[in-house]
Length: 168
Image (cartoon, rainbow, N blue to C red):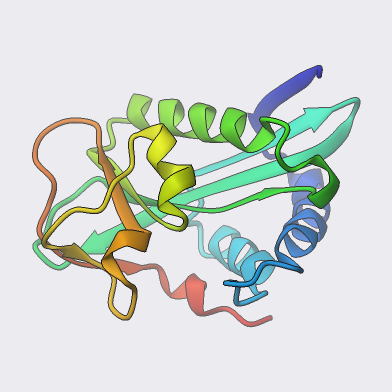
């Protein structure tokens, strides 16, 4: 696999939307609006990190990271997601490569930490775990996880940007 991870470019946006829609099309626990969310984050200037995985000039994966707010006032916290890989390329390490690159980039930007909503078995491999006192309303605690780059974990309720409510 000859995979390159790079920042998104303006000409990538349509391909990212198509890829993200396809990646979540059959996902059981999906709103099926993930591609709208990425576009809304981009329009709102909230994509802190937007990386693509490219193989043979084809975009095969994408990851987005955007700021979140914590009710305690903790700063420099971000939310990872959505992360997308073409359905026929899942399970080949592309998502892991995107995760590692995005988290390294985020840490390099001075972030305090990152939260994610998803499968604990998958995200735990990257150091994410649920934290008592840090919650996302309406979500079982084990599926809302955090990774601290330095310092203590914040306590409070996390809120994602309004773009996560995008439906078109």
